[in-house]
Length: 462
Picture 1 (cartoon, rainbow, N blue to C red):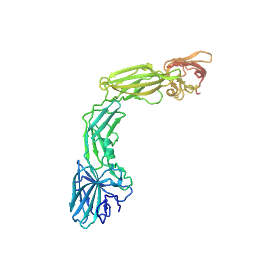
Picture 2 (tube, rainbow, N blue to C red; picture 1 turned 135 degrees about the vertical axis):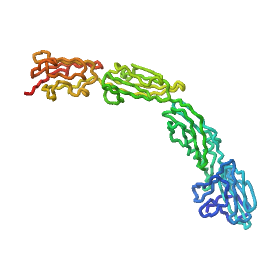
Picture 3 (cartoon, rainbow, N blue to C red; picture 1 turned 90 degrees about the vertical axis):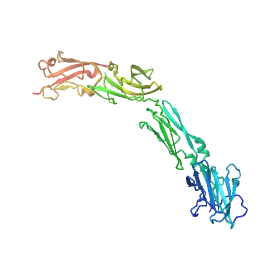
Picture 4 (cartoon, helix red, strand yellow; picture 1 turned 30 degrees about the vertical axis):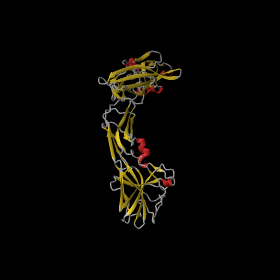
């Protein structure tokens, strides 16, 4: 059993410091009307003292001698400001009888020394907390980027954390303070929004911050605090107007008459785009198409197209596809809440393939036998090998230099040479022919030399 430094009594035969330890069957210092009770966590003793919490401004302690005999009760209160640790329990009251009760006690540590008529002396210590904390409301800091809500309490958060619900470790020579309950007072705080679409981050504190994005819907907010003593405190705001806006952009591409979501796979010029806004809490939206350029070796963007709309009138926009030649583009989208003045933006980078006629797109032999196998001279896998071509022309000559076939138009629509003179006359003779391809891409790249002229062999099965 631990013995602590005690005020000097005139006479005693037994000093029993009851710490709600396991070898004491009946505690003799109680708080019958308490709302919560616990024990201390002294670090250098296996025996602990009682903690009694009242949900009032004051509390009551009652003491009896274990014998039940008439006794003298000398009461003390802990004063942490006294420099001499041995003198920190200061006498506050003396009573006689079979029991003693003190009412109207303020928060702090209390000790009672009980001497009965047989001169048996017992000493008991307890810590008394008065949980009269109130929540006065919630302060609101509402901005475009975030919403911050802070519980306002009496006393304030910092006083509760540092100065309330404190007991001192009597097992240590310096009797250091333990702020466990004050620091944990608001740890179990549940925040809720009246609009379920608002995502509440886990906070568990007096401060709730909603950001990335800030709330997009008007709502009221409630906070429920379940403190370490099981007491529940609640508060609720009035409806808070959502200021923030969220720019949501969907980019779609028209491929062969079908709209599909833009992906990082390659697209050819001229690229037809549809820009759709899904902006939230906005009244106006804006779209921009910027072309990436390099000026003095630095990457810059130049706006080449823009559009805007009242969101209730229109949510989509179609950039001029003639602007979407090979290159790199940034599609910017802005949503604006003119009432709050908040703006949000988002962008997507779009690539339009450079023009290309790949060498392996041009075969060197074909056999126009109407058997469906290599029957025409045409590009191989044109979707993969032919990119962003603005104009295309092919001419085919016999070995004597006579033109036997020509085509001008879209290379993707070219069905190829079927082996007939001019594509519809008599069959051309079997043998070697010479082709010349001239083309220009949407990026003004020209295709004339290299693999874009050469020989092909027309072969007819016997």
